[in-house]
Length: 404
Image (cartoon, rainbow, N blue to C red; front, side):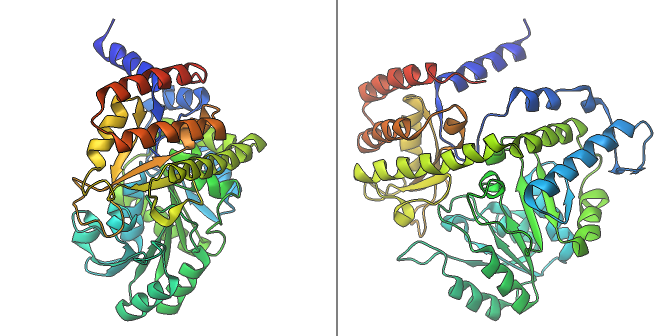
């Protein structure tokens, strides 16, 4: 038996016997995984359907056109490019399409829930462009659209970004679009985290008014690791040229096929029920944590994730608590919280989400149970016996909800 196969089986067992509460992770269906591992990985398809630089692309063309059609149908988009390899290069393609080095971009600060590619100084977005950051309100921990507007009027950005990685409340995409139009900017909505909720009507949609919408295809969409850029028809040529030849070579046709399968799954009535349950689970989980005395950023959630503020227990405890939870079989990630006085390497928060557990079939009762386990470990992160007893309980729960 090859060592790699052994490691894959080891990972399969880890996923089965632990609770995945990282909000950016999920479980793709067997059909998605089969498409991703298909013979399409053997093909090169530089260009667009009907305009390739290689022969032998009749099937690849049909696959890509199917993925495009399904993306447009699911989201109500005018144009879709399904070739981007992942979310970060997809955002980079948007920058390339509309900006020159040194132009001003405006996104949410990283410690307030933004993404690295939204202008972080350590990322290409902050190193290549002039980045200005808006923040959440220090008291409510929510985005103040009037403050966003005032900053945009002052800084005159060429690109304004909405959509986040650690913001537990609904986003007013229409207000962002109106601000962008007022200052003459392009509005990019990065819905990578909430795309499944948007598609199912569980979160307000950025369509049809938003200039550019980018989403990854895993997370709440339950597809392969990849991305899609959707836009108004007037921006289609700029986006397509930025993806290829501006940034990428040939698309990964096997991943395109897996995207098409995932998009078809998201078009089914069952997916709407799944997305609805994600939000129900998230709210039940949040309420139970707060009832156990755990502080949450914004005191709750509207979507798939909660952000725990650990500062009442000490500054910079995120990694320690995340490690203790992993020892107990609960997989999360340490995360900064708004106005965190610690560093991203030693943050004071914990980010948790319900998409993966909802895929396994868990509902509100299981969320409340898990919240109790997590609260106990947050309060006693060094208690090894508590970790061990929780681990046994976690494994028993996981056995009732096997992975597909």
